[in-house]
Image 1 (cartoon, rainbow, N blue to C red):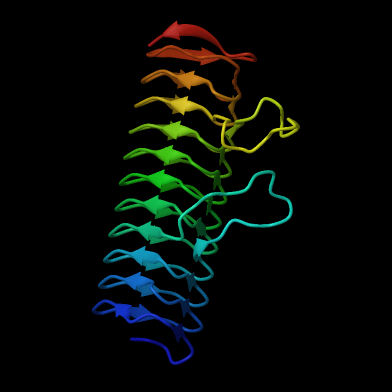
Image 2 (cartoon, one colour):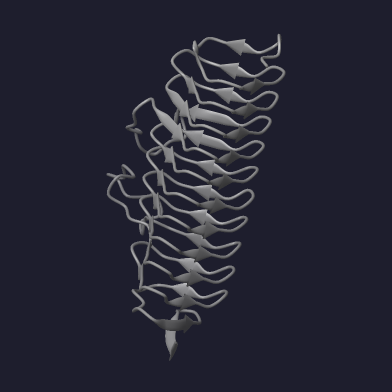
Length: 239
């Protein structure tokens, strides 16, 4: 069913698709089978949506990063993909160059910048942000109001609690040659857990199955299989 108010510029529409009021789907977009797209969603050109996906109102898939406030010139391909059985929440934005795996839940208000890669079974909580060039592995959960900075790596089975913040640039954007491409966010290894409100400074590595306590400030690498807490974070116990 395609509502008569929708603007459909593509011919690549699958079977049993529901497109509701005032949806915009631009040319060369691909919509799989059994997809539901709710009112006012925008599917830009070059976006590929898999089968059994639901896109909620005011979501924007395939946003181009641009604006006078950008400190760097983004490089990206005008493509974006959403895997089978995924859900894109209300007001979520997925930028060009980003791919979302299967069975993902992208909650309301999430913003995923360009050139990110999300694996299967990823959950992103409400009103959180993922900056450019970040990789998120399978079965990883990132909770509400968290900021994952640019060029970060979250491996498989990682848990990041609500309100966690991270940084990727020790110059805080003031370097004369800042281009955003040589900065590095945290690397969180497989099975690690980050507690609520923790802060991860640029380039730190969190070891496999390590736990970072709530409110900790991680200023240096933390080894695998430990519990770290405090400001700055220090290893307190082995698990």
